[in-house]
Length: 283
Image (cartoon, rainbow, N blue to C red; front, top):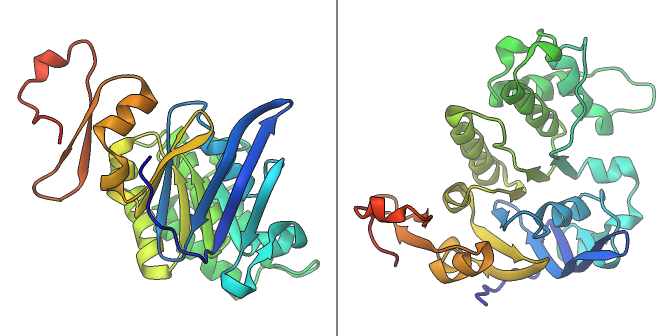
């Protein structure tokens, strides 16, 4: 197993998580650290437990064992001690399962993200309006602000929900397959936005990704899950090896380092891989 020493403090951390569906344990003794200004990508095949682990960090999945804490160092608190609003002012999550509202404008959906910052009887404040406008701009939705969401494509709706999470204005952001349903342009723009949030705003990000090249390009740290356990964690170059990936995904996978960018590239080898002999060999 490849490991890399993780920082002792974290904006959001799960320790020795044990998670189940009914009587079936699906995550075993998994520990995760999300630190300010860094992107942690969770990868692994379907059923490996990555989305379940992320949901547990977001208090959306019951924890059967272990702990989840928010905050850093001596100020860390168990998330079970926080009210729903307190937690939502710190942690936002874009999940895979989202409602499909109808008859509501894009800006009104994004405004839902401001709910944790409002008093019981308060209306929309200048701070709310600024946060909503900023989230719309970041996701390229400003010109769609007054369109009904039921008139949008799947990719456009995906960006609306991302904007809603951004409007929540939290220090921790959890994204479960944020590039799903997006065309190539918006996939790359979403990954750029993830990096901007980490680099320019100090956000701690946990991102579930299926595309391993996307993980290599955006992540500071990668956690590779296999059958509900951490198989490897650390720097992308240490985790994304042919040996690790071939074992976990059950097929031959080669990796190379791009000479121009220095990023790891992942090359799955299917039955017809001999047709692509021009691709460099695995490192």
